Length: 205
Ligand SMILES: [Zn+2]
Image 1: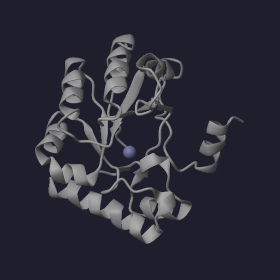
Image 2 (image 1 turned 120 degrees about the horizontal axis):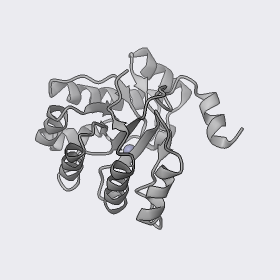
Image 3 (image 1 turned 90 degrees about the horizontal axis):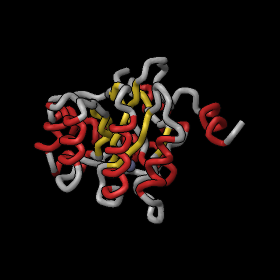
Image 4 (image 1 turned 120 degrees about the vertical axis):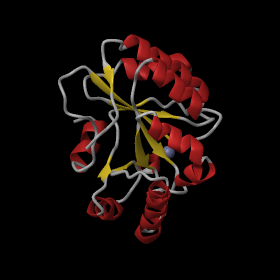
């Protein structure tokens, strides 16, 4: 069992891929919305008739409500990524859940709901995960992490991470953030072009 399989075995209640045999991929964008990057992502997805899921930071929704509403208006799914991008391993369960709920409230205040949650850094404890599941939230992990944010990883290497692993039902992580911008733009366009015969769908559970 490799380390990835081992982690999935320990955390069976977290969603690691979508079970399908159809040619479908599930792109996700974490850490937005921000005006410098998110509009480009929306335009690119629109040009390829692709839908995706945006795991938004609550504080960014608060700062950029119009951009957040645009994501919804364009038919994408929204997920909760905490209000302050909290690291579960460094937070008490109480303060972590408070940050999750605060993000949920700002999502609701913009007239939408989400039952999708992704822990920042992929890090939350079993107690935190249990509390989130009890609120009828699904914990969405990933099949492929592009590492678009990683300094030292070239844009081609970033794209190759996706190309070497993608299969029907894969959940792919990108970031609509300044740090990831260059690699994400390249890898996203290449992915959309390479997988022309795939449908890019938002996550609906
Ligand atoms: Zn994040």
